[in-house]
Image (cartoon, rainbow, N blue to C red; front, side, top):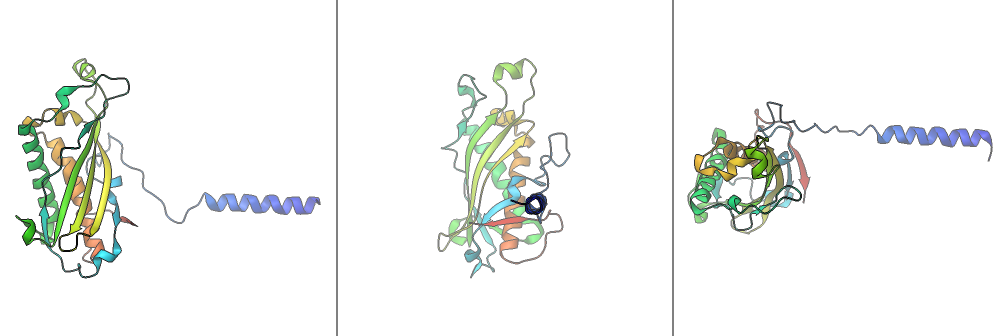
Length: 231
């Protein structure tokens, strides 16, 4: 092979490599814990919703949402590596009622912001229903480490779906893990710790923005650009 041909091939490969390193769109970096936007759902994975575009047909006029009680029966406690199981993380009936109240309050507040949607009391009244499953709590540290002064950080994983009440079709779905500096609020929910509310609020904001986008409705001035993915 001639030197000229080798040189041409090398230049072509360099050009291709340069193109692959310059995508047409950029992705914002998720905020770190010291960032004021950390618990505000800005640039978080909760902004990347899975949307069923076909569900918008006939559903653009939907306004009534029923918030179903969260499913806590599948909740797992994922302990730090090599840690012993900690049964004290199990949520009691009293604690579960606090979690349910926090979830309903925050979703209702965010979805009804600027009268975007009406929250109804029964499924029969609704056009859409939000189903939520708390999947897992991920404490970063053990109880002994917390008692010794370690930071109380961790994360919560949730699965949420917005469903067409009449057809049963999923309109929007998200499975997301969100971090917090105080995941241990879930181990002390009788205190009604606001850390719980902040997490649920961020998911409510994301679901509202996704639904507005799906319905082709007004731009939300409080929201960052939304990235939607087809299911």
